[in-house]
Amino acid sequence: MTDKTLDEIKAERRWNYAVYPSGTIQEQLDELAERRSTCPLSFSEEGGFWLATTYDDISSVLRRNNRGFVSFPNIPDGKVAFGQKAQIPIELDGPVHGQYRKILDPLFSPERVRAMEDQVREVSSGLIDTFVGTGKCDVVPQFAFPLPGTIFLSVMGWPVEDAETMNEWVETFLHGVPGGTEEETLAARMKASEESRAYIQAIVEDRRANPRDDITTSIVNAEIDGKPIPDSDLSDLFVLLLMAGLDTVQSVIGQSMAYLATHQDKWDAMFATPEALEPAIEELVRWTSPAMPTRNVARATATVGDLELPEGERVFCPLAAANRDPKYFPEPDDVRFDREAKPHLSFSLGAHRCVGIHLARLELRVAFEELRKRIPSFRLQDGCTPHDVIGLTWAIQDVRIEFEPQPAN
Ligand code: HEM
Image: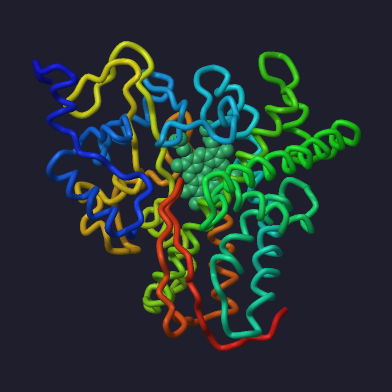
């Protein structure tokens, strides 16, 4: 600790950080690595947050959610999404957040998720059928993006034929109108928000009238503070569930497929033995680390690294920085399937640890198994250079692969 005032420390450690830069993921990781070795807890005046870069600092902040830190607002730029009060449950804190987790955790428990395997396999295989005969695939739009959204519809018991509309809404929420003005993006998001809310409202009313043995009915009939969840909160929760699972899974699949297209040895190693796949997927989830949460000091002061931060200070926790900390992951930029390191933080820690962790792991395992069955080897198409998209999550686009055409199932 130091005798300097917080303003003096901020001035000393001022180092602006662009949350949404135009460069590549590797450039962003290189910058985080430089900060980690020279100024592990810097202050971004532009962003109004402290930037944590070590595994120890990031994990200690995330573990203290509700105990010194809160997660509202969770978005790095401090903005609230689409006019909502707070995203449910990711921006809720304290006992009300705990009540939501008591509703959600059992619905996505390992047992419940195990029972979803056939549905997940059917969706994965169906998507592969749409391109496998052509010997080509644009991985993100044809597989990685529609996969989690369609699985979401299937496991929630919503009409799977609505997948395209659902995917369009989510695309608009997450990426706005590419190339459009801010006003165009805002208008498109408002429209998607109104349409999706009306759609969800109809589903909520249907489940109230015709309860089924499914996740949707369990959520619709759940109570918070002893009262039914208001319709607008149900809608916020369903939208968040859909979005939380969509961009993350698509990012892991997209980035992994771009890497594997130039590393056939790793693609083979993932299937070398039946035990090889799960640790390989964990390594790919570490290496791709899509999510970047923020936490805020809630009460009194909280220690982060060598500093005591007062109430209201924000700490940005890029999970990718923790996951590339060489203290725990030697040669962190390499994909190594035999790491015996700390668990990665891609699913976060503490109160907000990912609800969908078991579903995400199932989706990834089944997706890679189904891809391997039908596409034993693949490469990037000539002239294809995938490019990174650094937004609310880190992802990749333009992963166009080619392979020996196979008959559809
Ligand atoms: C590879 C895929 C995934 C990754 C990397 C991932 C990552 C994360 C992370 C880092 C958080 C916590 C953010 C924070 O600490 O503020 C989170 C929360 C959450 N995730 Fe996931 N996620 C994935 C897939 C899914 C899926 C498939 C679902 C669908 C059920 C899901 C549902 C949620 C929900 C509901 C939360 C909020 C939890 C809370 O606030 O208590 N995620 N996820």
